[in-house]
Image (tube, rainbow, N blue to C red; front, side, top):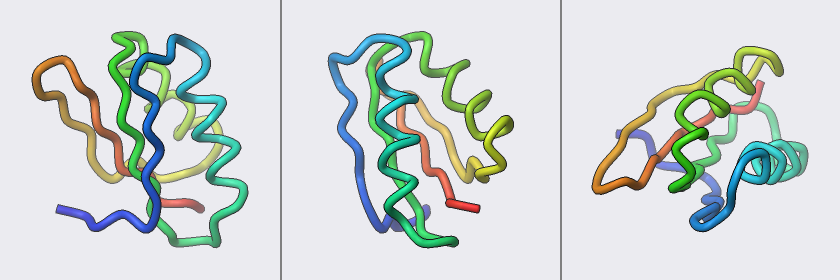
Length: 76
């Protein structure tokens, strides 16, 4: 499992806020750093991978446990 450099708690936030907050947080990271995003919005399972594909960031892992989604994103 990847060890993140930073974690974004997006629990309780609805689309598009988890992606918007992830975008903002990634801007402050350096290339290669990993951001872990934790969300419970069901739309995030589609939105976060799409955001990574469109923005060029690398989605390292994605998992779901008890309704909580976790994404590890490496900044490109």
